[in-house]
Image (tube, rainbow, N blue to C red; front, side, top):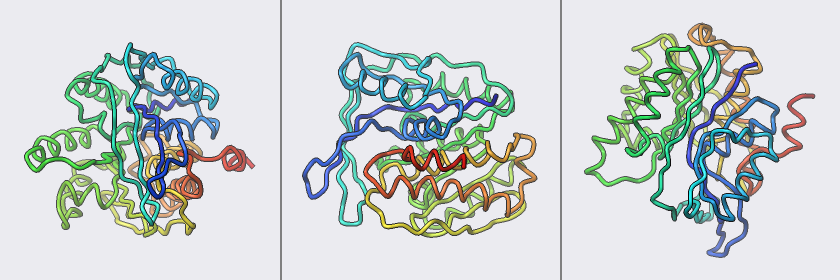
Length: 304
């Protein structure tokens, strides 16, 4: 059986609309994807850390209820991470984070060929855990796992940009699929980012870049073609978790089509339409509510 390992931070998201709290949900980029993949019936492990507090207890219970293996989660004596998510009139979120400074080391699994590794966001740039993460990714790449990276860039000071770009590009070199939004890539490379991305895919036949842009088509860039793929049309309630679940849907599509690492470079534009279709459907389902993951009803429909 192919296994998926999702690596990242855990948060408890308190969602505000019109400056009033409306919901509280367990969240975090990698966690959102893990829960959706667990609901979809795939073999998923979550690698993270959170406190020995009430929010940590809620988080672990929720993960286990949604078929996510928690063997690689580290608990620590301190406060779990909290995110305040403020929705604007278009239901896009801006965040404020509150977290402990504690960063216990994670234990990493032995990865097999054709397993999936999903990582990204702040966790992939943090100096306090980066060396261990990079060491694991190098081993996973050597074992021929499919490594999916989502930069999910947050705002940073101009003085930090060279260091951030250097870390992102090292992450990209170790990855098979790089999924980012137009906002991510514009923040990193400016308005002419596609030239930078094309040079990245030219370094390897097995390097794929997926660019999302909200309701607009997803752009797929490979060593042999660039393609635009239409997304699902929906009425958005909240965009929280949309990108995370696009990642989950892409992994689900690759898993369902039984795509091995050695086959990535030979996938056609039509293959990618089918795979991106799952990403789009997962994201659309999440955007139709204030939860961060696909619904159980949607998950059940995948196997019909």
